[in-house]
Image (cartoon, rainbow, N blue to C red; front, side):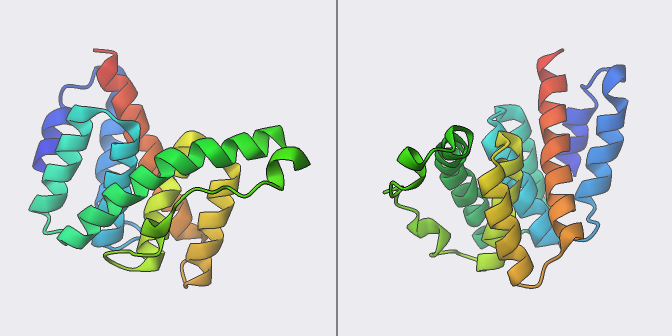
Length: 174
C-alpha cells in the first residue's frame, strides 16, 4: 500500500481516522484480496478523484491483483455511472409512468465479466452506495448473497467505498 500510504500522509490531522480506517479495510476483513482491491478500485473510479484512483490502482497492481479484476472494477464503475442515475431516478419518482417503461439501457458488460459474476456484482455495490441508489444496492446485494456471499461481505464493500469517499473529501480540503 505504498502509494496509498504516501497519499494518506498528505491528509490533515483532522482526517487521522480515515488513515487508520483505510489501512484496516484494505488489509482485508471478510473479503479476499481480489475482492477487496476490486471493490476499492471500482469505488475510486466512481469517486473520480484522479490522485486517489492512481494510488489505488498502483497499489492493487503492486499487490499482484489479477488484470481481470482491474478490468471488472473499471467495468463496474462505468456501468454504475449510468445505472445509479437512471435507477435512482426511477426510485425517486416512483410512478408507474416511469416504472413501467423499459430501461432500454445496454448492460451486457454485467454478463460478460472478466472474473466472476459475483465479483462484478460485489464491485458494483460501492458505487451504488456512493450514489445512494436504493434499487441498485438491493439488486446487487441480492445477487451477491444468491452466489454465497453474506451481509459481512456487503458491509465491508460499503465501508471501503465510504472511507475512500472520505479520503477524497479530505484530500480536496487541503
